[in-house]
Image (cartoon, rainbow, N blue to C red; front, top):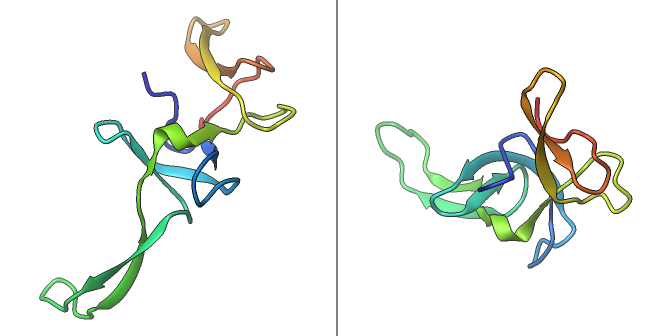
Length: 107
């Protein structure tokens, strides 16, 4: 079960981008990667065609493996925390931080 979802605030915990933070734009569960806003930018060389009038070098974000991302939890001492699932008063399943028992994630 993947616990990082679109809209979550995450921190990179290993690799060349260690300690960088950003918001998840897209999660690809088949590949086990996530695209994080402003991180892991790659340059692509494009030729001009009918759809794109201009060619040249374009930058875009590439995927980061989910195992290298940690969820940022509000009110946590280190900022990162694992999550668990519980039910709220209305019986709806929600995600909460294990360390602080505060709800996390995008709403």
